[in-house]
Image 1 (cartoon, rainbow, N blue to C red):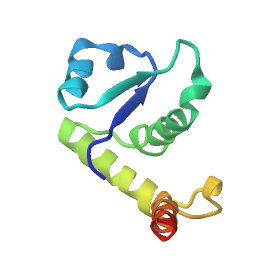
Image 2: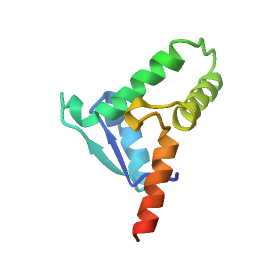
Image 3: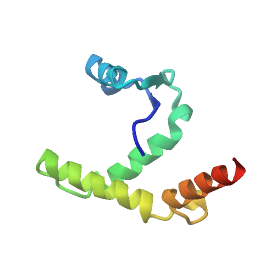
Length: 108
């Protein structure tokens, strides 16, 4: 879906590093960081990471970065296009996104 306008994270060291923040700034992406201990601000992405770890990473013995990239990419594709989500009444995120996009177009 293209480059994001804003990137929201917690204050983990991987997100506060000079290399990471510089990469975002150089790409013109605004940085938004939740306050320390504000887990509710990031609850949805934390749930995604949990699912990724338990449904993909912990179940596969990736031996190389390429294997991990491919395996995680396949899982993200599955998560967005084929995995039914109870929070979306049994629909996929892609279905929800497409419905919202269509509604916006009709309202315009």
